[in-house]
Image (cartoon, rainbow over all chains, first blue to last red):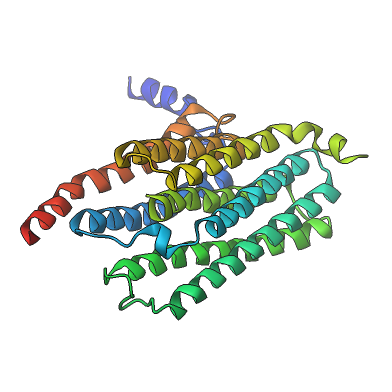
Length: 204
Length: 100
């Protein structure tokens, strides 16, 4: 009876040697990483939501931020996601030239985004914003801003390093399509987090 | 090979890019318009979730993966995030009332 049950278990999807969710271990681990890293940002944004509810007033976003500049940043990041998705598709079709071009375009887009973020930070710091205070009446506002966008920016920077490695490997013809896909998953995750930050911090 | 031929198999990504752009523009324009706060927040949150689904589904290929993977990701992130926020939000409001 025990043997029959264990044979049935070994033959099932959970018996070993097969991934239950139908993806390779590499991809599954990237998704698990994305989930855990996403929870980091979920924690930050939940804390920010708590702070907003617990504070009577909050700086007017239209006075603090240059919304069209931030929108341009969003446009750049979304475009870089589209070029990365094209790169992943090209990798599946073994089109090495297109992979190299699209990954490079993604790299450029990410670099532009970081440069724009640095410009925004510089502007706000020059206006008096810091981790300790700011001129807009709510002491913790700038703290939340720098922590949340700073963590996101550091993820973008890490993504740029990964993309540079991928672009170099693609150029030398030493890249697997799975490698491009995993780098793509990370980059799209960075874009996804920005969608949430842009809406919850800048717009609401 | 022209640009169109190159992009022939990739048009779904660029259509998604177009949708995302339109959604973003709508969100930004609405944010600066004289819209009642509750409606603005609801519309922005809905648009945000639509953008998230588009990126996760199309760019990250979750719409081609097994449902078990998509649900693992969605429930882990959205449900946990919602629990994080909605369980501590009443404390935030309580703090506000205490201050007043």
